[in-house]
Image 1 (cartoon, helix red, strand yellow):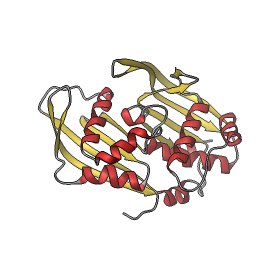
Image 2: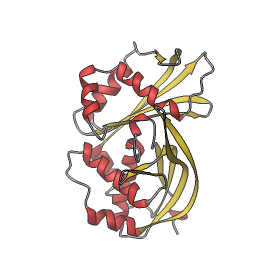
Image 3: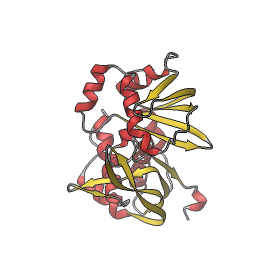
Length: 258
């Protein structure tokens, strides 16, 4: 890997002999596993950062337990993913449960920021997108939890996360945020509320999907498309380093955008 800005996803296929429920609430315990296997000085740096340069979550997909770890910069890739790719990292124990977990497979995929801009900003994106909230998602607004997918909160989260890791200059502006919010509508949704358990606290959150349509200019649509593809790595909302806010955002086919 070179030193250019990049987004990377590592997928680990997990297996355990114990009857353990690998639901999204295990995200906080897996962050502990993560920190045990990376450089302690970098862990100290991560503890001091507000917005973390990575997201992670665990999900059951097609009957397999998949641990997703996604880094948002080249430095985070080198400090977090590279150690986990080492052949010596083939099993770990989950704290509090005394459960041994084996890593049955590893796969990694990266995209540079330059490629992200070339592929998703300079193109001709459609107007409709589906946002799947795959793990509990919530926002913090004026000191209170907000557990509904308000468009302002979605765009604000993506723009602020992008600026926290990108060296390309600021993407966030109040005018752009207002234009994106006002030009986008939710045209369909399937959502449910639930609580995310974290260190004795149950955070109000939501799961499900929404379908949105953007009525702005093509430049605005392409800008949103860029943010959405970034969001597939960064997650949306609060505590994405602990397993919350994992999303899959897809552009609808042209024939569906009419």
